[in-house]
Length: 225
Image (cartoon, rainbow, N blue to C red; front, side, top):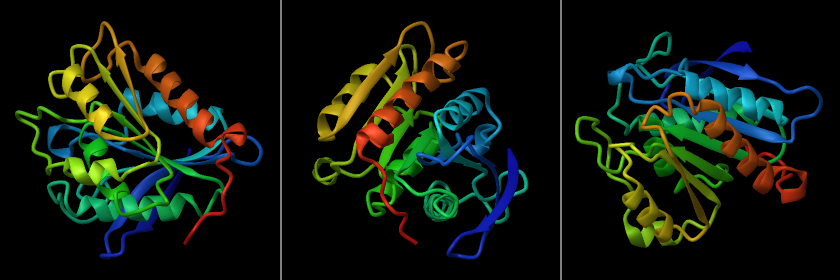
C-alpha cells in the first residue's frame, strides 16, 4: 500500500492509501469508512478485507480518511461536506486506472457514497455495507427519496449482517426493491461489524465487482476527469 494525499474541491487535504494490483488494473475502487465520531477510519478489519479482495481481483483501490479523521485535514461535516471527499477520491483513483469505478462504503461511508453517487456517474457501481437505515445513535443525513432512488439505474450491492441493528434486513430489502438494479445479501451469524465474516463479505463484494465491472462485465471505460 502506498500513502497518498489528494485535495477536495473545497480545499481540504485528505490522506489515503493506494493499493495497485499486479498487471494492468481492470478498474478502480474507492472505500469509504464508518462514522469518525464513533471510531471510524480507513483502518478497520472489514475495510482491509474489502481492499485486499478488490486489489487481488485486479482493481486499483483507494482507501482514505474523511475530513477531520486522523491525518486528513478539515473538520467533520456530519456527512454533508464529506460528499466532496468521495468526489475527490473518485477523481484521484481514476488517475491510476482506466475502467469503471466501484465505490464501496460501510455504515456512515455507505450513506455518503450513495448520496454522492446520485449526482456523479463516475461512480459506476456501489457496494453498500451496513447502510444505516435505523441509525438510532448514529447521526447521518437522510437518504434520497423513493422517486430519486427509482431513477438510479446503476448496479448496487446492499449487504448487511442478519443481526445488524442499524441496517435491519427488512428495511434493507425494502430499499433493494426501490433501486432498479440492486441485489441484497444478508449474512447470517453476524451484525453491523461483520465480525468473523470479513472475508466472506469481502468475497461477495469482489465477486459483484468482477461481475459488473470486470472484463466479462463490459466495464472497461475510459476515466472521466
